[in-house]
Image (cartoon, rainbow, N blue to C red; front, top):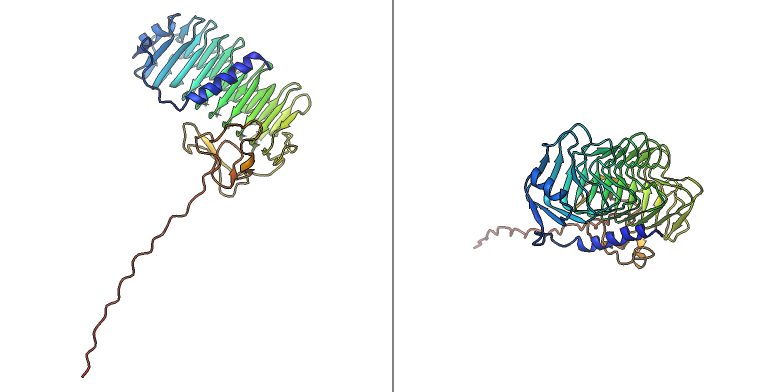
Length: 398
């Protein structure tokens, strides 16, 4: 496996372990910014290593070409502390954050929105550096390729407890364009790749897309891979559903590479092609308990697989608790309790004891297939009202 692929997966796993920490003020060396000018100065400082936002920031003073730029090989952490950075410049190349050198960009607790660029990466763009998001959102941006995030020149993208949504690209990768993508407890939704491929995620090289406890839903591509286009895809307890493209509505596996999955659902293509398309021959490794509804993904060889299993009865993408939107299996869904308890941490799922929202697995007699573990509804305990004593009228005789 490519070393860059390994690095993004290791980094994503490390971030997942740290994501439950409460992030407070940064280290003493951190630079606190409160407005556009101080953000531009801090991000543009090639030696800066951490920036803390103390307010929402609107980018409006530099236009055209109003992106916040950096040319540095030094990693920088931008902690938004719950704040938003909004790009408002409407002419020229106006991504939100751009690093023109090889340094990594790490974003925490921040929303990045409004970027618009003819170049790659409407929200975030790097040239050779890796991008990571923790407890963050990249939404409502547009670019030539990688509408939300473009890790150009071999960069990778890692998401933990984060969302990439409602971005668009005129070329590929409506949400994300990178050489490898690792997602944990995250959602990519509502992104569009115009007349091109990879509505949600595009990995144009030989890299890996790895989803763990994650959801890719409602993305659209004009040609291939409404949800994901990649050479290798690994799914663990994930949901890829409701995406649209003429070929590979949910997943498009390029060349002679592999789809590897455990406990995941790929279903409900929203239009065009079937769930999965393998460009040069099908190659699926099922570790068990996977579900598709049209037999196009090659599930069936693994224990507990359900190939062409019919409607999985997934609810719409919504806030079902947790930090990201998910698709909750509805009452009667065949996904519920479909994995025996003894197999809940089978191949590829070792150590996973919660769902995308942080709800403990299992909740019922088994674990649920997909990103969400449904808690059984406990009937309310009805305490009968105390009996009202009947009035007694004494009777007198004699």
